[in-house]
Image (cartoon, rainbow, N blue to C red; front, side, top):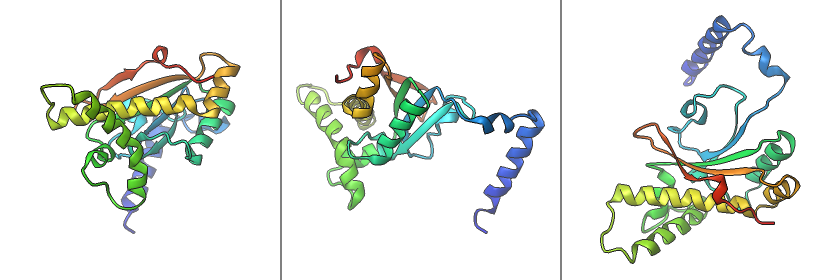
Length: 206
């Protein structure tokens, strides 16, 4: 079996957890109370729990290519509704990351074929806005800096998309100030998370 090594690693992990803490798994059987909804990229180098040193039950996670908040994404809006109405989560983080393949593809002259192209058209708006700002600058950034700028702009764009979603507006109307919306960027090269959007800078539509 090609994935036999992963199953063996799972058994070892479970044994180690029980050896360290006999109640480790039993505590999770009664339910979950995560403190954050994390909307991140599907990139395998960006595991939310490890980045934030969190354990099981601390984060409620939704991931997709380029951490996009699309208005017609039923999967995302279902996650949002469950997080806000059932889990009573008060903080939502949109986290992008450096060296994002989705952002790199969105910045290419020609987009990939198929569904990926349709999806990345959303991120392409972040590229357009960065290009507009740079059009007035005499000095152009190098490629790595440029991509970082688009990654950050994409996070800001997705946070803005959250403010327009009915489930988020409903929550804020019922409980003003909730959810608090955050925009972060994870730097793959350093392991650090930088804040690009603070909740105080965000206005949720009435």
